Amino acid sequence: MIGYDLGMHRAICVLAIVCTGWAQQSKSARPEFKDYAVEQVYAGPPAAPIITPNWRSFRTRIREGAKSKVQFAGRYTVPAWGCGAGCVTFVIVDSTSGKVYDGFLVAMLPPEWEEKHGFHPQLEFHPNSRLLKITGCPGETNCGFYDYEMVEGKGLKLVRKELLPKQYQY
Image (tube, one colour):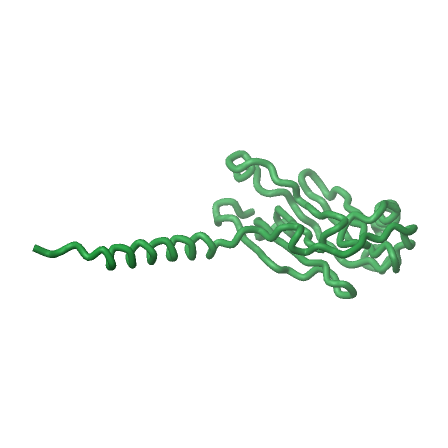
């Protein structure tokens, strides 16, 4: 008869717990806004946006959106406008300098996915955080969850991406 080894049982239990925790962490959660906190939020008058040729067609939308108080990363506004049903285009404007950082078109997630999992806003950002969350299909492809950090002087830097399963791609 094989004897019961309590020490071996404990080792197996610990190993199972560690492996379970590792498996759960391998599909990382979206970062939190507080993880990208800014020290202060600009409260002065917004600078007029410097419209580049590639955004000239949208100059009125950008100028109007840039008049808002700071919306993102301590000093930026995020002018956004519709580009069709379930689609939004955005740019990021520095309220202190007027520099316009390129954004892009984001289509909403496929209706089949949202019916099953619920609605998620396409763009999420806060005045006191450098984190921008995009839930959708940038350029109408590669639908999923995208997390960007605003890097001063450079624009958006992708920090995390999680694509939806193939059956939910356009």
